[in-house]
Every structure is written in C-alpha cells, then in structure tokens.
Image (tube, rainbow, N blue to C red; front, side, top):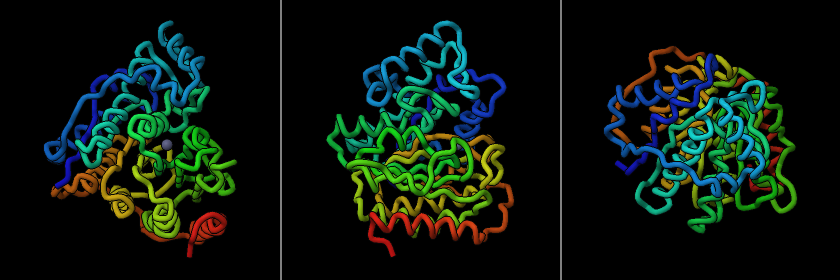
Length: 345
Ligand SMILES: [Zn+2]
C-alpha cells in the first residue's frame, strides 16, 4: 500500500450556495462514502490550511481577489448568474486552495506518494479576473504554480476529466510549454470553449490538448481517448508531477452532465494515469452533482491511487458500454490535430 493523503475539512461545508447543485451535500456524501466503505482508515486524512493571498495571486489579479473579499464582507452576492457567494465564501475558497497546496506540499516533499484534495468550491472555470461556473479561485492552477515556484518542479501535466471544459486552467497556461493541459469534455456544452483547434499559443503552442466528445459517451470512449491521445502525449511530454482536475459530472447519473461514465470508468481512467506516473499524482475535486454517484466515483478513484484492498461496487446499473460513431469520429479528429505536435500512431 502506498501512502495517500486525503485533505478534507468541515470548513468546506460553510460555502453556503442555497438551493444550488454545487452544495455541501455533495462533499459530505463523498466523505461519508469513503468512511462507510472502510476506505478512510487506509488513508492519511488531514485538515486544510488557509492559502495566503500571495498564493492566490499566482493566478488571479489583485483586483479580482479584492472583489471577492468585498462581496463576501458585504454579506454575499453573485460572481456570475450561477456562482453565488455567501459571507463565508472568501474564507472557504482560501481553504479550498490551501487544501490543494497542503496535498501538493506533502507529495512534493515525499511525505505522501499520491493524494486527493476533497474540496469545494471547485476551480477550473475561474479565470484570472473572474469567477464563473460555480468556481471562485483556480485551485489546480494555483497549485501548479506553487509546485513550480516552491519545489522547482518544472514539467507538470494537468488532466481535466470534468465533463465541462476547464477554460480557466487552459487560459492560465496557454502560453506555457512547461504545463501540458489535457481536457476531455462534453461538447457542445458549457462553457463553450475547448475546441480541438485550441492548442496553445506562442511557446505554449501544442501544449494544450482538447478532446471534445459528444454527449452519451461511455467508459470505452473515454478509455480509447486516453490510450490514443493522453498516454502517448504524456509519455513524450514526460511530466514530473500530475494534477487531475477530477470532476465526476461525466457520471451517467449526474443531473448536469450528459455523459454515461460509471464509477468503474473512473477507476479504469485512474489506472491509465498511474501507468503514466506511478506517484506524484494529486487529484483535486471539481464537479459531480449526484451526491451518491460522486461518493462511489471518488472512492473508486482513491482506491486506485492508494492501492487499498477494499472491494465495493456502486449499486446502479450503468448504460450499455459501446462507442458511437460520433464519438469515434471526434477522437479521430482530435488525433489528427495533435499529430502536428506529438508522435502519434
Ligand atoms: Zn463540471
């Protein structure tokens, strides 16, 4: 068994979004499922720390950070139509980033092999100057810069398997050849970015890889995209550290996403990632809006990265697993585009 750190903190329940799919219920369900399945005792579970404002500024502008603080201090409000802030949201968002940084520290210093930050609010839609899509600060983006600045880790792979495209993360590293951003997502869908031809720019050209897939994709389609694109590109890039924007809203029971992935699918995707890098992988929770499905999906993923000998299955029947012609075509088109930059079959 390898040492796995899980950061979870009750402060994450205090980002009060009211009647909203991104609620504390999801996180509680995920944590309780890990407990109930006997997985928690196999992990090192730690509370978060609070991120410093200077750490938030690795990605975000001072004006934006100040705006979030001001809205929260005045009792709350909205960053966009679907991103509510309560009076405590600024504080919670700082702890969400801090939870990711704590995991990153532990792994970078060799105190843990892999880890997961079970946090909220999520982060991958947050732009330099704006929060959106339930996201306040870009947790994964900030952790990426932190690992580079504090630990001299240069080449970092970000895998974003949330059902939505991670526009904020993509934009933060669009010109950076040391950060490879790989996103597999539903398209057309919110937020509208993540086309195949968004491939990075300047020195970063070729270091953004988008695999937009039609709704209804099952485990096999995701695994095919991983085998055909992610594995060979990642091997050639040779990352020193992997961050996963681990959203679980591609699950077939998710009320927002339109994909047909099962918790077993997330387990298999995790195994593929471990084949790229056996340790120094940090999972960061993004979306996932069916609390039960989220619980099982998180648990299956942690099981792979912690090598825990706990057996369980989600109690739902997944859709029939077959790859549609539309999905095949989408993967082929992504491959064709990426051949300009990587040695692909
Ligand atoms: Zn999402």
